[in-house]
Image 1 (cartoon, rainbow, N blue to C red):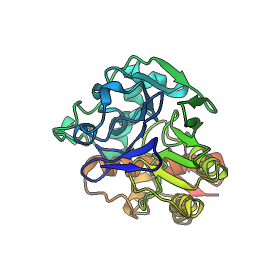
Image 2: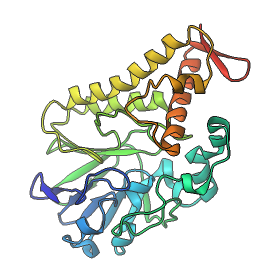
Image 3: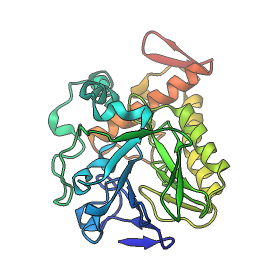
Image 4: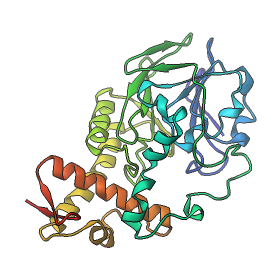
Length: 305
């Protein structure tokens, strides 16, 4: 599905719901043609001149944003400089998943069939996992790209991943926020290099841009109330943390906290989701310990100070 925001800026939505392994893309049909992200699926891209795309901006390295890079063979592929490693260093990519913590958090070694997807839809032309890529260049916070009638600014918004970027079109006041997605499930920060403090700062950074239209990777287009949406989205994470902090009036470990289901927006119905749930709890504990609100005792238990 193609949603035209302006003559040049168009949202490319998957033919099915825009959730993993799919994500929305943004198509810039201008003198320099570009796509932001490559996860909308082959069926969605089939209606577009993908071979004529000049630039492919990659918001971050997660599979649902890059699995369709093979559709854009002629495009120059560029990503944020903070995350170039994710396409060039498989060992560091594997570390970023956090799976080295699986046995500690889940109580048993990880099996291959516990990956998120063992079978992928036919229009997703890549296998789940590491996807090496030769980048044509990197961008940094504040870089401006003039495409012709439109221009966009790269906005470094880490937290979800260290090199996560959003893209702002100042003239049209359109923000592509990628995985700062205003989802009712709230922020996701379930990997090793996720940083909750950085996530909070990034949300406020986007609010300060005062966008009129919000396009994200996994939700619909919002054309009003963007600040309220982002604050409500952030508040979900802050409420999770407040519940955890109250629970830690007595010492508990990550498993005890997970049993309380404080992150109930992400149902613990599959092993990988339970693992992410525990990783997100760990991110809260790291933040609370950093800010002097909890301490770790007996190696694996935490208590409120």
